[in-house]
Length: 183
Ligand code: ADP
Image 1 (spheres, rainbow, N blue to C red):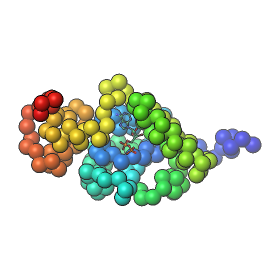
Image 2 (image 1 turned 60 degrees about the vertical axis):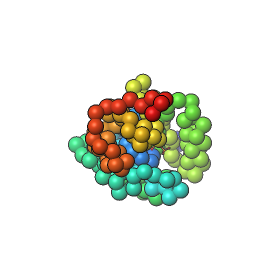
Image 3 (image 1 turned 120 degrees about the horizontal axis):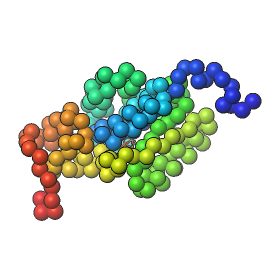
């Protein structure tokens, strides 16, 4: 019998795992979660604690921010994990890894990761959602870069993240500033 016809798996509701660094969470990420909730019963935002990747915020700080931001959305679970994503997914009842795709530059890395994860666990699939037009240029990396230089990131990340970035970079809470080539 084809695996998809075996039945009972689906009775627990459709769960997707949305893994990433979320260093920090942006409206691009939130948009993907909100759209995924139209398809899945539950989305687990899984913050990767990867020692090799230098992060601005600690896993604890990221957990606190993401949990606060989704506190009124009961079907979003926020968690963190260490090690292989497939091992973490195996501990949940999720069958789908959710990832967002921006420009073509995301494609190669995402294609390799999805293929590797599928080779590690053939029961897992990765589902990609295209970025929304409002957020195609938003990445955690550019947010950190702009914020560190005192540029305005309001409207691209939640207010809580704006405040935490200002605290991190020891910047005063000031009016919007555009960064230009001369700054
Ligand atoms: P990584 O796991 O590479 O550290 P991030 O934590 O930055 O990635 O993001 C997690 C996932 O969200 C990735 O699949 C990434 O491509 C996606 N993503 C990030 N920013 C956006 C955005 N603005 N629009 C759509 N998807 C995004």
